Amino acid sequence: MYLHLGENTVITDKSIIGVFDMDTSTVNKATRDYLSNAEKTGKVEYVNFDLPKSFIVTDEKVYISPINTSTIYKRSK
Image (tube, rainbow, N blue to C red; front, side, top):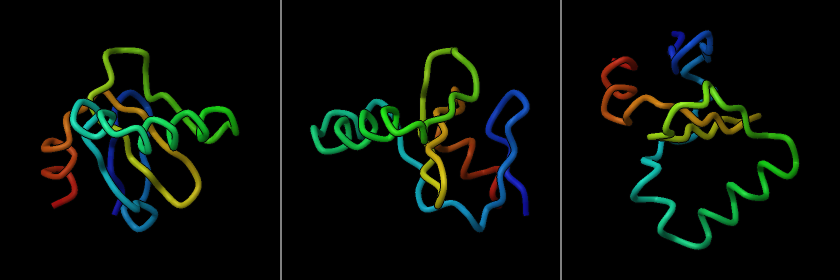
C-alpha cells in the first residue's frame, strides 16, 4: 500500500520504520543528533517547507512532513 505524506510525496508502507512527532521527539538530544546527521549525509527529504509536524524514517530516507502523526496513522489503515 502507498502512503501520502503531503504535496507530491508518496511512499510504500513497507519501507516505513517509524513515524515520529516532531515536537515531542526532538526534545531528546539523540533524536536531534540523528536528524542532524541524516541531513548532513543527504538522507533528509522535506515534503514541503511548511511547519514540520512529523518525520518518517524509512529504510532509505527521512521525510519531514507537515502532516500530524495521527493523520499519517489514519491514512495507513
